[in-house]
Image 1 (cartoon, chains in turn brown, orange):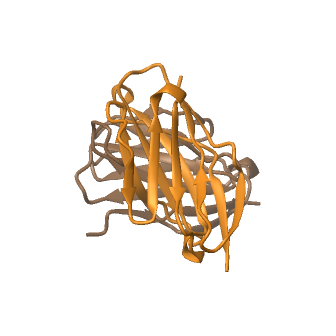
Image 2 (tube, helix red, strand yellow):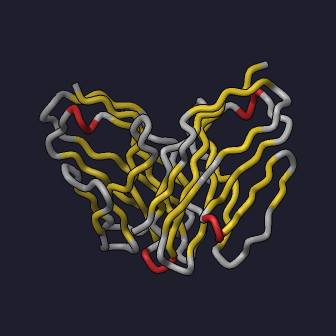
Length: 112
Length: 115
């Protein structure tokens, strides 16, 4: 049982480049989330989805877009990367009703 | 609005010492859940415990124990007889059921256990 899988694990981008982070879960969870982790700031919610075909903004959505065309996948896009987007990105999924979130292994993104 | 505060940025202890990590939360909702996650140096997030707002019983799991007090909005985590393998960043988090189970994380406490 793979749980939550993120692709890629590491990436270096030049300012202005675009990329897509892929998150896949095999637990049939309805809810999926993208967080970013920065030193001293914990994890902050970028976007989330409460079901296939739905997305919503979180705490820090600017500069990112998401899509959830299939229930098991949640994509995070950066259209024009900026150095401020250098961070570790975590995808998570959960069931409804106060259950714990299951996290992927993280993607370390550096924008130069 | 929801908020989680972990005032201790970094703690260093010597192996076998007991250590308590503090967590204070804010929410106006009456139905919520509190969590602790561990992030070892390898970087993954490991779930440790979940408590709901209606259950203030303390919980013990081996060397780990958790103290939930609604009166002070705190959910503290104690490690007894710490070990080097406990060295990690620990995050406290809050989720509100009626807000799509979104998680609100504290800034984390880095625990260094020295041999």
